Length: 327
Image: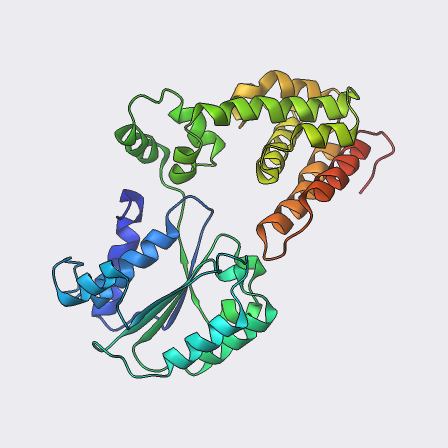
């Protein structure tokens, strides 16, 4: 499946292959929820198809559909890990140096590429430095800053932008006409249609109210940190941090004079106004920066203690609700 906002990128990459101009290594970047992995897989189907149009009928397409094409590899973290390990990269390097089995090209996707630790990333560099002819590596990442600079420099960046809002809304309504909140959900998803789909269940909006109330309770002193974190034990920490980041950013906008139409969390204006009573724009932006640090830690290849992480974060954000706080 290829999403409409990805069609022009796929057509450009396929055309470059026809002109023998496709890079050996590509890095697909853009925020989450845009379908970068689907784009990479669609390109693989185009390149390995006998007629280069992803026909679905030829032997190559049938092998890809069955997950048994010998000239394609998908490298992802194992079920028991959040990292792409060095053993996986060593196996990939050995595979890269072998002759193609079915045709002229071999393609590997690494998703997410930033899940490689330093050892596996260094091992990948060997495959990128002296690539065999007609071998392509596609790295997919929501957070390319976590990749080694040497890897980024050896891959051509393919930017996957957020689609136009009108296109995204039209597509979302085609998926489910019964959802009345697509405009809000797309705003909350930073314009990423696939994330808006994930947020379209009623439970998500209920959790938002719970999380936003928790942040308010923290800053107005209605609850202690340990009790507050315990009350959020059934909510994914990533959701707590994401909503905290966007709410504090909205607080900063409001403190700086932005109107309600500039507020991302348009369904939480009362809560944002309440938090704004306790924090300046400077403090709110500092809170955003502090939460971003822990969010990146949660999404990275490490496995931190989530309860302790939230407790430490809440204490730090509570301290930001202080006239003496400074960066």
